Image (cartoon, rainbow, N blue to C red; front, side, top):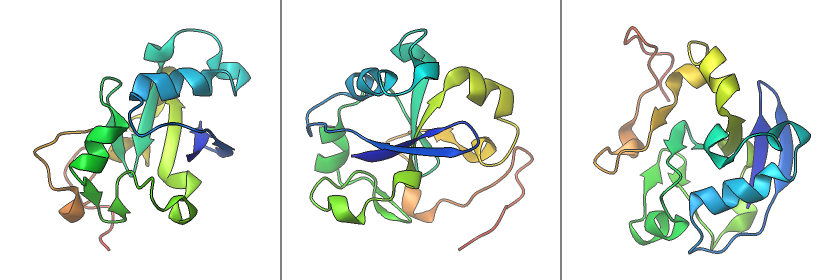
Length: 134
């Protein structure tokens, strides 16, 4: 899986995970790849995919079985790793997010809700105004 460490800039990296791995396990492995992420625990890091904050307790298998879609296609597509864009998958330190959640793009990030249809999601700011629509 390709991803990037995100702190306003993109530091590309990759990691091998299994479909049945939980998100917290993936985040724990990413901590070893970046010096700034060594301190603290997995709870201090978050996974963001296509403006969706993925909670730690989900398994990647959940997203595959339920075919969770966004405007960009499947949220996690392990069958087509060549089509993956590292900038779509971000590993973010929570302290950075807390300081910058009022600034784009972090202001558009929402926690995953299985009831929401993300294929029709429109990016809005905190006041409800549309950023741009594709």
